[in-house]
Image (tube, rainbow, N blue to C red; front, side):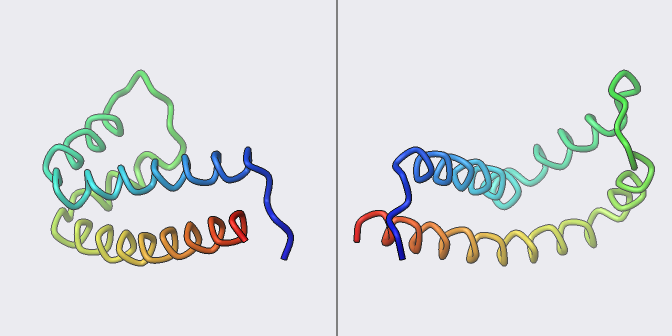
Length: 92
């Protein structure tokens, strides 16, 4: 395997950090995360595609939280695993 460029490594780790920080908010600041998301979807000034679809899912809060956390956990494992592989490729 060839060594990835430093720029790629930095951008990759920044996107990983973004995902992990959103996952942190979901897991440890759940109510704030839910309210922010709901407020952004109910804001009439922001045109979002599929707004109704996502609002319908948010109405069932407990189910929504369960599935968000389940996929978040899967994503965290995948992101950390890829971070390890990319850093190992860069270093060695």
